[in-house]
Image (cartoon, rainbow, N blue to C red; front, top):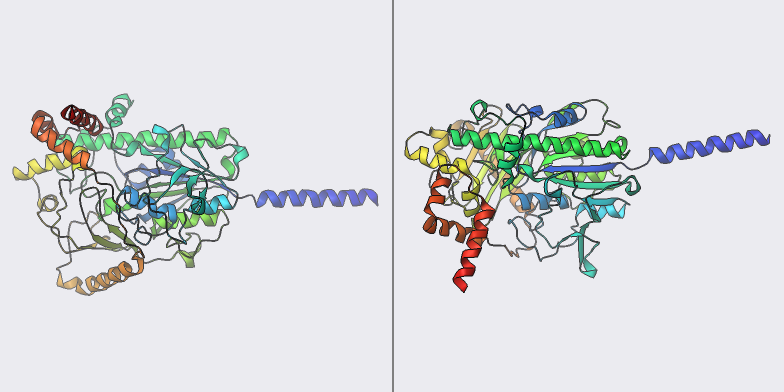
Length: 500
């Protein structure tokens, strides 16, 4: 009898241990590529090779219609960090309100993860510049406790490293190589297989010119480099024995930094890649086509961790069909550096509607920062003068924006034909106009405090180059990236000399 009792006790112990392991929360790794639309091989982008992300999609879930709530990095990241639309939390102006705490009840989602026992990690040594960017528009520190009563606003526990001892852990890693920077040329020069500019497929709203083709090829070179970083993260998870119980999420923070991309409410500014890899739960690869918001990613992470999603979140968990169902993603474009904008948009599976409240601000607003970072714009200005742009390409350079834009995405993925004035579509225009107004009111923040960071240095540097370094500006006009940080540094030297 004693041996039977011991056997029963042993069976109960094993069952208890098995149950505990079964309930172990998953680790979660969130990879966020900067300034990238769905420009991956697994999304059908030609001329680029992304084997690691292809594998991730082939073994996981690929979302085809995921949209950010703002096409600029800091408002978009703010919405994802809180799981709530950036307008609702007064974080919609780029690089604003960095000394103003979030109002109650809003909190960064890492607060809830840490409360549930997660170790939260920012960055990783396997990626360019260690991937530590946060860039959110409310008072915060990267590392430390989140306790506003003690004037502590930390988002993460530590930098760079996750270990088995940290389980369960959450790691957010920024893949910033795809963001424009001085490293683009270096990455292309060191690539064993640089993308051939002659073979690239440009979107039809870009002018066809050797400088624009080269710029696109450089961008795809960085996408391929970034894919290698993704592979390195997976190898680290395997080497540390944590891969089996780790969910890996891959997204972009906003669209690509090019014409009609980052900063614009058009498709290439709002649509981002979104892949989830977790073979332990999602045993079959699948493609999901429903409309998804970037804030839904945040809510889904809490759900994966077994944490109730706070009522204030506008994001919805994606693996509960009733909760996740949405007809539209609501997006806004507001202040970006010196360019004051105010535009709203909603995107459905079928339709895109944009309302531009500041029609006097053109798409090509000559924003100082972008003058350094968008070679295609310089080249296309010249092509326009030479009469070498078609109607769609010229529309970007009109002196005013249309008051309303309406596109039928199922037939017009590049948004060539604005149907806002077409009588055939007036009923849908009115419906989407009213829906947008409704969402403007629903998301309106309680506070209208705005403390922006104005980029006077970039404006001054550009004016100085035009006046004092005309040979450099001529290079810019030919589509050469002359180096933003290099010339900001030179301009600051100039200012110091002037002060002496």
